Length: 446
Image (cartoon, rainbow, N blue to C red; front, side, top):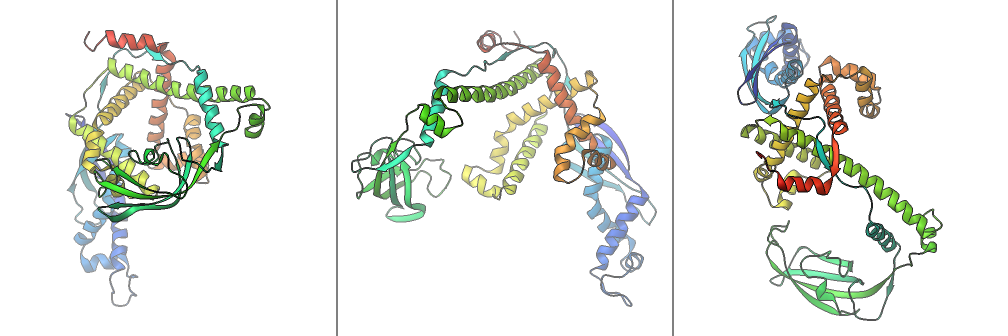
Protein backbone atom coordinates (compact mmCIF):
# COMPACT_ATOMS: atom_id res chain seq x y z
CA UNK A 1 0.00 0.00 0.00
CA UNK A 2 1.35 3.40 -1.00
CA UNK A 3 0.17 6.62 0.68
CA UNK A 4 0.75 10.29 -0.08
CA UNK A 5 -0.17 12.92 2.53
CA UNK A 6 -1.05 16.53 1.74
CA UNK A 7 -1.58 19.02 4.58
CA UNK A 8 -4.69 21.16 4.17
CA UNK A 9 -5.79 24.37 5.91
CA UNK A 10 -7.84 24.11 9.11
CA UNK A 11 -5.94 21.16 10.62
CA UNK A 12 -7.00 18.73 7.92
CA UNK A 13 -5.07 16.31 5.73
CA UNK A 14 -5.69 14.60 2.43
CA UNK A 15 -4.32 11.07 2.08
CA UNK A 16 -4.12 9.50 -1.38
CA UNK A 17 -3.86 5.73 -1.28
CA UNK A 18 -2.91 3.13 -3.85
CA UNK A 19 -3.89 -0.43 -2.95
CA UNK A 20 -1.66 -3.01 -4.64
CA UNK A 21 -3.07 -5.39 -7.24
CA UNK A 22 -2.29 -8.32 -4.93
CA UNK A 23 -4.33 -6.80 -2.07
CA UNK A 24 -7.19 -6.03 -4.46
CA UNK A 25 -7.11 -9.57 -5.86
CA UNK A 26 -7.29 -11.09 -2.36
CA UNK A 27 -10.31 -8.94 -1.57
CA UNK A 28 -11.95 -9.89 -4.89
CA UNK A 29 -11.44 -13.58 -4.12
CA UNK A 30 -12.99 -13.15 -0.65
CA UNK A 31 -15.94 -11.26 -2.10
CA UNK A 32 -16.46 -13.97 -4.74
CA UNK A 33 -16.43 -16.70 -2.11
CA UNK A 34 -18.99 -14.70 -0.12
CA UNK A 35 -21.26 -14.39 -3.17
CA UNK A 36 -20.83 -18.12 -3.86
CA UNK A 37 -22.50 -18.90 -0.54
CA UNK A 38 -25.71 -17.42 -1.92
CA UNK A 39 -25.46 -19.09 -5.34
CA UNK A 40 -26.16 -22.55 -6.70
CA UNK A 41 -24.24 -23.28 -9.92
CA UNK A 42 -24.55 -26.42 -12.04
CA UNK A 43 -22.10 -29.10 -10.96
CA UNK A 44 -21.35 -27.49 -7.57
CA UNK A 45 -22.99 -27.65 -4.17
CA UNK A 46 -24.35 -24.36 -2.86
CA UNK A 47 -21.47 -22.17 -1.74
CA UNK A 48 -18.78 -24.40 -3.27
CA UNK A 49 -18.39 -22.79 -6.68
CA UNK A 50 -14.84 -21.48 -7.32
CA UNK A 51 -14.33 -17.70 -7.26
CA UNK A 52 -13.35 -17.62 -10.93
CA UNK A 53 -16.66 -19.14 -11.94
CA UNK A 54 -18.60 -16.72 -9.71
CA UNK A 55 -16.78 -13.77 -11.32
CA UNK A 56 -17.60 -15.19 -14.75
CA UNK A 57 -21.28 -15.62 -13.84
CA UNK A 58 -22.00 -12.26 -12.10
CA UNK A 59 -19.34 -10.14 -13.77
CA UNK A 60 -16.13 -8.55 -12.48
CA UNK A 61 -17.78 -5.18 -11.87
CA UNK A 62 -20.31 -6.66 -9.45
CA UNK A 63 -17.62 -8.57 -7.57
CA UNK A 64 -15.24 -5.59 -7.31
CA UNK A 65 -18.09 -3.44 -5.97
CA UNK A 66 -18.70 -6.01 -3.22
CA UNK A 67 -14.95 -6.31 -2.58
CA UNK A 68 -14.54 -2.55 -2.16
CA UNK A 69 -17.55 -2.33 0.16
CA UNK A 70 -16.13 -5.05 2.42
CA UNK A 71 -12.44 -4.12 2.27
CA UNK A 72 -12.49 -0.30 2.30
CA UNK A 73 -12.71 0.07 6.13
CA UNK A 74 -9.67 -2.17 6.53
CA UNK A 75 -7.76 -0.39 3.78
CA UNK A 76 -8.57 2.94 5.44
CA UNK A 77 -7.21 1.71 8.78
CA UNK A 78 -4.00 0.44 7.16
CA UNK A 79 -3.64 3.74 5.30
CA UNK A 80 -3.90 5.65 8.58
CA UNK A 81 -1.06 3.65 10.11
CA UNK A 82 1.02 3.77 6.93
CA UNK A 83 0.64 7.54 6.51
CA UNK A 84 1.34 8.45 10.14
CA UNK A 85 -1.75 10.67 10.23
CA UNK A 86 -3.52 11.05 13.60
CA UNK A 87 -7.17 11.27 12.52
CA UNK A 88 -9.83 13.21 14.40
CA UNK A 89 -13.45 12.67 13.46
CA UNK A 90 -14.94 10.80 10.50
CA UNK A 91 -13.17 10.86 7.14
CA UNK A 92 -14.55 11.89 3.76
CA UNK A 93 -13.64 8.94 1.52
CA UNK A 94 -13.72 8.78 -2.28
CA UNK A 95 -12.69 5.83 -4.45
CA UNK A 96 -10.84 7.43 -7.39
CA UNK A 97 -9.74 4.44 -9.45
CA UNK A 98 -11.53 1.08 -9.66
CA UNK A 99 -9.92 -1.91 -11.41
CA UNK A 100 -11.60 -2.94 -14.65
CA UNK A 101 -10.07 -6.40 -14.54
CA UNK A 102 -8.03 -8.67 -12.28
CA UNK A 103 -4.41 -7.67 -11.72
CA UNK A 104 -5.01 -3.91 -11.55
CA UNK A 105 -4.51 -1.68 -8.46
CA UNK A 106 -7.19 0.43 -6.79
CA UNK A 107 -6.91 4.03 -5.62
CA UNK A 108 -8.89 6.03 -3.10
CA UNK A 109 -8.39 9.21 -1.13
CA UNK A 110 -9.76 10.64 2.07
CA UNK A 111 -9.76 13.91 3.95
CA UNK A 112 -9.87 13.93 7.72
CA UNK A 113 -9.24 16.25 10.64
CA UNK A 114 -5.79 15.95 12.23
CA UNK A 115 -4.14 17.09 15.42
CA UNK A 116 -3.42 20.86 15.23
CA UNK A 117 0.17 22.07 15.26
CA UNK A 118 1.58 23.97 18.21
CA UNK A 119 3.97 26.90 18.16
CA UNK A 120 5.83 26.33 21.41
CA UNK A 121 6.64 29.03 23.91
CA UNK A 122 8.54 28.55 27.16
CA UNK A 123 7.94 25.05 28.54
CA UNK A 124 10.92 24.08 30.71
CA UNK A 125 11.52 25.32 34.26
CA UNK A 126 7.99 26.70 34.68
CA UNK A 127 6.84 27.80 38.14
CA UNK A 128 3.65 25.92 39.01
CA UNK A 129 1.67 25.64 42.23
CA UNK A 130 1.87 22.35 44.09
CA UNK A 131 -0.32 21.44 47.05
CA UNK A 132 1.03 20.23 50.39
CA UNK A 133 0.55 16.50 51.04
CA UNK A 134 0.27 16.96 54.81
CA UNK A 135 -2.89 15.33 56.18
CA UNK A 136 -4.75 17.54 58.73
CA UNK A 137 -5.76 16.01 62.06
CA UNK A 138 -9.46 16.57 61.36
CA UNK A 139 -9.18 14.40 58.23
CA UNK A 140 -7.63 11.61 60.33
CA UNK A 141 -10.51 11.99 62.76
CA UNK A 142 -13.09 11.82 59.96
CA UNK A 143 -11.56 8.61 58.62
CA UNK A 144 -11.50 7.15 62.15
CA UNK A 145 -15.19 8.00 62.52
CA UNK A 146 -15.91 6.39 59.14
CA UNK A 147 -14.30 3.17 60.40
CA UNK A 148 -16.22 3.55 63.64
CA UNK A 149 -19.47 3.80 61.67
CA UNK A 150 -18.59 0.56 59.90
CA UNK A 151 -18.52 -1.29 63.23
CA UNK A 152 -21.70 0.30 64.60
CA UNK A 153 -24.47 -1.91 65.94
CA UNK A 154 -28.17 -1.25 65.47
CA UNK A 155 -30.46 -1.87 68.44
CA UNK A 156 -34.26 -1.62 68.29
CA UNK A 157 -35.65 1.03 70.64
CA UNK A 158 -39.14 1.87 71.84
CA UNK A 159 -39.08 5.60 71.26
CA UNK A 160 -39.62 8.24 68.60
CA UNK A 161 -37.03 8.45 65.80
CA UNK A 162 -34.39 11.17 65.77
CA UNK A 163 -31.47 12.23 63.57
CA UNK A 164 -28.93 9.39 63.33
CA UNK A 165 -31.50 6.65 63.93
CA UNK A 166 -32.11 3.95 61.33
CA UNK A 167 -35.71 3.16 60.41
CA UNK A 168 -36.90 -0.04 58.78
CA UNK A 169 -39.85 1.03 56.62
CA UNK A 170 -42.20 -0.04 53.88
CA UNK A 171 -43.40 2.67 51.53
CA UNK A 172 -45.58 3.15 48.45
CA UNK A 173 -45.41 6.34 46.38
CA UNK A 174 -48.26 7.72 44.28
CA UNK A 175 -49.02 10.57 41.90
CA UNK A 176 -52.61 11.82 42.19
CA UNK A 177 -53.47 8.67 44.20
CA UNK A 178 -52.04 6.39 41.46
CA UNK A 179 -48.97 4.30 42.45
CA UNK A 180 -45.99 4.77 40.10
CA UNK A 181 -43.29 2.37 38.98
CA UNK A 182 -40.22 2.33 41.22
CA UNK A 183 -42.02 4.03 44.09
CA UNK A 184 -42.43 0.98 46.33
CA UNK A 185 -40.03 -0.72 48.76
CA UNK A 186 -40.23 -3.18 51.65
CA UNK A 187 -37.90 -3.45 54.65
CA UNK A 188 -36.01 -0.40 53.45
CA UNK A 189 -33.28 0.73 55.88
CA UNK A 190 -33.35 4.52 56.07
CA UNK A 191 -30.89 6.48 58.20
CA UNK A 192 -32.28 9.86 59.16
CA UNK A 193 -29.92 12.70 58.39
CA UNK A 194 -28.05 11.11 55.46
CA UNK A 195 -30.31 12.53 52.71
CA UNK A 196 -30.60 9.14 51.01
CA UNK A 197 -33.95 10.06 49.49
CA UNK A 198 -35.20 13.17 47.73
CA UNK A 199 -36.28 16.47 49.17
CA UNK A 200 -37.04 16.39 52.92
CA UNK A 201 -38.33 12.80 52.92
CA UNK A 202 -36.29 11.82 56.00
CA UNK A 203 -37.05 14.98 57.98
CA UNK A 204 -40.76 14.21 57.85
CA UNK A 205 -40.12 10.93 59.67
CA UNK A 206 -38.42 12.54 62.67
CA UNK A 207 -40.61 11.77 65.67
CA UNK A 208 -42.16 8.66 64.13
CA UNK A 209 -42.37 5.45 66.21
CA UNK A 210 -42.55 1.77 65.34
CA UNK A 211 -46.00 0.72 64.18
CA UNK A 212 -46.96 4.17 62.93
CA UNK A 213 -47.90 5.24 59.42
CA UNK A 214 -46.83 8.57 57.98
CA UNK A 215 -47.83 10.36 54.78
CA UNK A 216 -44.69 11.96 53.35
CA UNK A 217 -45.14 14.66 50.69
CA UNK A 218 -42.27 15.47 48.34
CA UNK A 219 -41.60 17.23 45.04
CA UNK A 220 -39.26 15.57 42.57
CA UNK A 221 -36.54 17.85 41.13
CA UNK A 222 -37.15 19.33 37.70
CA UNK A 223 -34.10 17.50 36.35
CA UNK A 224 -34.87 14.15 37.99
CA UNK A 225 -33.54 11.15 36.02
CA UNK A 226 -36.96 9.53 35.54
CA UNK A 227 -38.72 11.99 33.24
CA UNK A 228 -42.23 10.89 34.23
CA UNK A 229 -41.46 11.98 37.83
CA UNK A 230 -39.48 15.16 37.15
CA UNK A 231 -41.11 18.16 38.83
CA UNK A 232 -44.07 16.08 40.08
CA UNK A 233 -45.64 16.26 43.53
CA UNK A 234 -45.81 12.81 45.10
CA UNK A 235 -47.15 11.30 48.32
CA UNK A 236 -45.54 8.30 50.02
CA UNK A 237 -47.47 6.12 52.45
CA UNK A 238 -44.72 5.06 54.88
CA UNK A 239 -45.11 2.26 57.45
CA UNK A 240 -42.48 2.46 60.20
CA UNK A 241 -41.71 -1.12 61.25
CA UNK A 242 -38.74 -0.49 63.57
CA UNK A 243 -36.71 2.35 65.03
CA UNK A 244 -33.10 1.35 65.56
CA UNK A 245 -30.48 3.30 67.46
CA UNK A 246 -26.93 3.27 66.15
CA UNK A 247 -24.49 2.21 68.87
CA UNK A 248 -20.94 3.25 68.06
CA UNK A 249 -17.90 1.55 69.64
CA UNK A 250 -15.42 3.67 71.57
CA UNK A 251 -12.39 4.79 69.58
CA UNK A 252 -9.93 3.09 71.91
CA UNK A 253 -7.27 0.38 71.86
CA UNK A 254 -9.90 -2.36 71.93
CA UNK A 255 -11.53 -0.90 68.79
CA UNK A 256 -8.12 -0.70 67.06
CA UNK A 257 -7.49 -4.36 67.86
CA UNK A 258 -10.92 -5.43 66.57
CA UNK A 259 -10.90 -3.25 63.45
CA UNK A 260 -7.28 -3.71 62.35
CA UNK A 261 -3.98 -5.48 62.93
CA UNK A 262 -2.86 -2.75 65.33
CA UNK A 263 -2.88 -2.94 69.11
CA UNK A 264 -3.48 0.73 69.93
CA UNK A 265 -5.66 3.50 68.55
CA UNK A 266 -2.57 5.67 68.05
CA UNK A 267 -0.99 3.02 65.82
CA UNK A 268 -4.23 2.81 63.82
CA UNK A 269 -4.37 6.58 63.41
CA UNK A 270 -0.72 6.64 62.32
CA UNK A 271 -1.50 4.02 59.67
CA UNK A 272 -4.51 6.04 58.49
CA UNK A 273 -2.32 9.14 58.23
CA UNK A 274 0.31 7.24 56.22
CA UNK A 275 -2.20 5.80 53.75
CA UNK A 276 -4.03 9.09 53.30
CA UNK A 277 -0.74 10.90 52.76
CA UNK A 278 0.30 8.35 50.13
CA UNK A 279 -3.05 8.69 48.36
CA UNK A 280 -2.89 12.48 48.59
CA UNK A 281 0.64 12.49 47.18
CA UNK A 282 -0.47 10.49 44.13
CA UNK A 283 -3.37 12.87 43.55
CA UNK A 284 -1.19 15.95 44.10
CA UNK A 285 1.44 14.63 41.68
CA UNK A 286 -1.22 14.01 39.02
CA UNK A 287 -2.67 17.51 39.56
CA UNK A 288 0.82 19.04 39.46
CA UNK A 289 1.62 17.35 36.13
CA UNK A 290 -1.69 18.54 34.68
CA UNK A 291 -0.94 22.09 35.84
CA UNK A 292 2.54 21.98 34.30
CA UNK A 293 1.07 20.84 30.97
CA UNK A 294 -1.53 23.61 31.10
CA UNK A 295 1.18 26.17 31.85
CA UNK A 296 3.12 25.02 28.77
CA UNK A 297 -0.08 25.16 26.73
CA UNK A 298 -0.72 28.70 27.99
CA UNK A 299 2.68 29.75 26.67
CA UNK A 300 2.11 28.08 23.28
CA UNK A 301 -0.03 29.05 20.30
CA UNK A 302 -2.48 26.39 19.15
CA UNK A 303 -5.37 27.10 16.80
CA UNK A 304 -8.21 24.60 17.19
CA UNK A 305 -10.92 24.95 14.50
CA UNK A 306 -14.47 24.63 15.79
CA UNK A 307 -15.30 21.62 13.64
CA UNK A 308 -12.19 19.83 14.95
CA UNK A 309 -13.27 20.40 18.56
CA UNK A 310 -16.75 19.13 17.70
CA UNK A 311 -15.26 16.01 16.10
CA UNK A 312 -13.16 15.32 19.21
CA UNK A 313 -16.18 15.91 21.48
CA UNK A 314 -18.12 13.34 19.42
CA UNK A 315 -15.22 10.89 19.82
CA UNK A 316 -15.31 11.44 23.58
CA UNK A 317 -19.01 10.59 23.63
CA UNK A 318 -18.37 7.48 21.52
CA UNK A 319 -15.83 6.31 24.12
CA UNK A 320 -18.33 6.86 26.91
CA UNK A 321 -21.01 4.97 24.95
CA UNK A 322 -18.67 1.99 24.44
CA UNK A 323 -17.78 1.97 28.14
CA UNK A 324 -21.46 2.01 29.07
CA UNK A 325 -22.18 -0.88 26.69
CA UNK A 326 -19.28 -2.87 28.14
CA UNK A 327 -20.95 -2.52 31.55
CA UNK A 328 -24.30 -3.64 30.19
CA UNK A 329 -25.94 -0.21 30.06
CA UNK A 330 -27.70 1.15 26.99
CA UNK A 331 -26.28 4.61 26.11
CA UNK A 332 -29.80 5.74 25.23
CA UNK A 333 -30.91 4.84 28.76
CA UNK A 334 -27.96 6.80 30.18
CA UNK A 335 -28.98 9.84 28.15
CA UNK A 336 -32.53 9.50 29.42
CA UNK A 337 -31.29 9.36 33.02
CA UNK A 338 -29.24 12.51 32.41
CA UNK A 339 -32.23 14.18 30.77
CA UNK A 340 -30.08 15.20 27.82
CA UNK A 341 -29.67 14.40 24.13
CA UNK A 342 -26.47 13.13 22.54
CA UNK A 343 -26.07 16.48 20.83
CA UNK A 344 -26.32 18.29 24.19
CA UNK A 345 -23.70 16.01 25.74
CA UNK A 346 -21.34 16.69 22.84
CA UNK A 347 -21.98 20.44 23.02
CA UNK A 348 -21.25 20.51 26.76
CA UNK A 349 -17.94 18.67 26.29
CA UNK A 350 -16.60 21.09 23.65
CA UNK A 351 -14.39 23.05 26.13
CA UNK A 352 -12.83 19.82 27.41
CA UNK A 353 -12.38 18.53 23.85
CA UNK A 354 -10.57 21.73 22.84
CA UNK A 355 -8.40 21.59 25.95
CA UNK A 356 -7.55 17.96 25.19
CA UNK A 357 -6.49 18.84 21.64
CA UNK A 358 -4.33 21.76 22.81
CA UNK A 359 -2.56 19.52 25.32
CA UNK A 360 -1.93 16.82 22.72
CA UNK A 361 -0.59 19.34 20.23
CA UNK A 362 1.86 20.86 22.73
CA UNK A 363 3.08 17.52 24.12
CA UNK A 364 3.61 16.15 20.61
CA UNK A 365 5.55 19.27 19.61
CA UNK A 366 7.72 19.01 22.74
CA UNK A 367 8.46 15.34 22.04
CA UNK A 368 9.56 16.26 18.52
CA UNK A 369 11.63 19.27 19.56
CA UNK A 370 13.37 17.34 22.35
CA UNK A 371 13.88 14.39 19.99
CA UNK A 372 12.58 11.99 22.59
CA UNK A 373 13.61 8.47 21.62
CA UNK A 374 11.89 5.22 22.55
CA UNK A 375 13.79 1.98 23.02
CA UNK A 376 12.64 -1.48 22.04
CA UNK A 377 12.63 -2.49 25.71
CA UNK A 378 10.31 0.40 26.62
CA UNK A 379 7.81 -0.60 23.93
CA UNK A 380 7.85 -4.25 25.00
CA UNK A 381 7.38 -3.23 28.65
CA UNK A 382 4.43 -0.99 27.73
CA UNK A 383 2.72 -3.96 26.07
CA UNK A 384 3.31 -6.54 28.80
CA UNK A 385 -0.02 -5.99 30.56
CA UNK A 386 -2.03 -6.31 27.33
CA UNK A 387 0.10 -9.26 26.24
CA UNK A 388 -0.63 -11.07 29.50
CA UNK A 389 -4.37 -10.88 28.82
CA UNK A 390 -3.80 -12.18 25.29
CA UNK A 391 -1.61 -15.00 26.66
CA UNK A 392 1.46 -13.95 24.75
CA UNK A 393 4.58 -11.88 25.40
CA UNK A 394 5.16 -8.19 24.91
CA UNK A 395 7.79 -8.92 22.25
CA UNK A 396 5.47 -11.14 20.22
CA UNK A 397 2.62 -8.65 20.51
CA UNK A 398 4.91 -5.85 19.34
CA UNK A 399 5.94 -7.95 16.32
CA UNK A 400 2.26 -8.43 15.41
CA UNK A 401 1.56 -4.73 15.78
CA UNK A 402 4.50 -3.84 13.54
CA UNK A 403 3.01 -5.90 10.73
CA UNK A 404 0.16 -3.42 10.26
CA UNK A 405 1.84 -0.30 11.61
CA UNK A 406 0.04 -0.18 14.95
CA UNK A 407 3.34 0.01 16.82
CA UNK A 408 3.37 3.75 16.00
CA UNK A 409 0.50 4.23 18.48
CA UNK A 410 2.53 2.69 21.31
CA UNK A 411 5.61 4.71 20.38
CA UNK A 412 3.63 7.98 20.38
CA UNK A 413 1.97 7.16 23.69
CA UNK A 414 5.35 6.56 25.37
CA UNK A 415 6.79 9.72 23.81
CA UNK A 416 3.93 11.80 25.24
CA UNK A 417 4.43 10.26 28.70
CA UNK A 418 8.13 11.06 28.52
CA UNK A 419 7.35 14.61 27.46
CA UNK A 420 5.08 14.97 30.51
CA UNK A 421 7.84 13.64 32.78
CA UNK A 422 10.31 16.08 31.19
CA UNK A 423 8.00 19.02 31.87
CA UNK A 424 7.17 18.04 35.47
CA UNK A 425 10.78 17.20 36.40
CA UNK A 426 12.01 20.56 35.11
CA UNK A 427 9.15 22.54 36.67
CA UNK A 428 9.66 24.57 39.85
CA UNK A 429 6.94 23.87 42.43
CA UNK A 430 5.71 26.87 44.39
CA UNK A 431 3.17 27.04 47.26
CA UNK A 432 -0.44 26.99 46.11
CA UNK A 433 -1.30 30.26 47.86
CA UNK A 434 1.50 32.00 45.98
CA UNK A 435 0.36 30.48 42.67
CA UNK A 436 -3.25 31.50 43.33
CA UNK A 437 -2.22 35.04 44.25
CA UNK A 438 -0.19 35.29 41.05
CA UNK A 439 -3.19 34.16 39.01
CA UNK A 440 -5.27 36.95 40.54
CA UNK A 441 -2.63 39.57 39.77
CA UNK A 442 -1.74 38.40 36.26
CA UNK A 443 -4.13 37.97 33.38
CA UNK A 444 -3.47 36.80 29.80
CA UNK A 445 -1.91 39.66 27.86
CA UNK A 446 -0.41 41.42 30.91
